[in-house]
Length: 151
Image 1: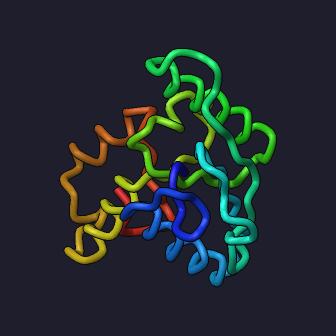
Image 2: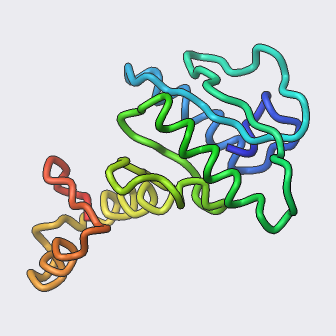
């Protein structure tokens, strides 16, 4: 994360979203760790309600154009060190771009798709066989078998 309400100096909509979402996930008995990329000092003790601050990074040495790659490399090292079951992150900054293929990555896009499917009633069984077949043949796409609404 680059922003988290009550923790980072800058907080926009995403920071507020995650600051309310992650404690709700913790309340479902899921262990949640947070990795923050922020230049300013963090508010002490502000990660609350069971969310743990795993790592905090400042800007790496190097030119501005290289920063996204350096952040993605740092995040890959964090994931290798903490070995989470799932990685949930906003992907506008490409933080997950260099993660190994076997890391279970959930992004805002996947979350939005799931919610959209749930609200609309779309399920895997309602999709044409050709669509489901093309999703299965794409190694980058996973269809969750335990969730009838995942595509």
